[in-house]
Image (cartoon, rainbow, N blue to C red; front, top):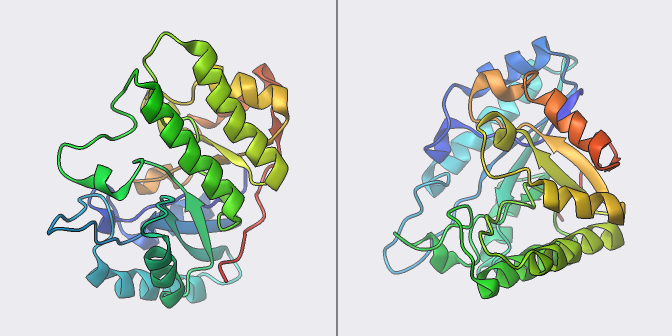
Length: 260
């Protein structure tokens, strides 16, 4: 694997290391194309501040750092500037305007919450777990609409929602909606290696079984929050085994969808 477009920085408050340490790790492991895609800043309203995004005041530094590293290591690695963001219809214009103002090259769709209100303290985070069909359906609506928007290079951890209900037919139906949208619009779905190395509730076999049946495009993302995970050789074989197990349509390096 010689690419990774899912990389975070210390600015999001839950990653460590310097930007250059990520780049050096990637170069040493043979990565040719690397993208920084930290969580885009967003004002979530009524005085609440997100605790997992880049603060807006650090965005200029983020852009400058990636740009400087791109020049410093030119010829050794191709570096790209992006953001990971949710598809919030009520905040979409604001988020896109900010990304464009930063000169972002691409976006990843990472739907951690169903709405911006979900980022308020003690609100619902999709990995917390829920048996509520309405919440699962709302999550699927957001991801499917995000795919259909054509704004995103790929969907990060599409199986992020931790469904704990007994209605597995419902879960498969919602997974099918995401996978069909991916196939129709040729937007890949990511097997997320952070989920593997951290032993999280994703990747979910029942989701990827549906993806294999549909034949939608699939890619990998290290979702690096530490420099050593800019190439995660320990988790990569597990992701590769998922591809074999479910006969997934693994496309390798995704084509960047340029932010216009």
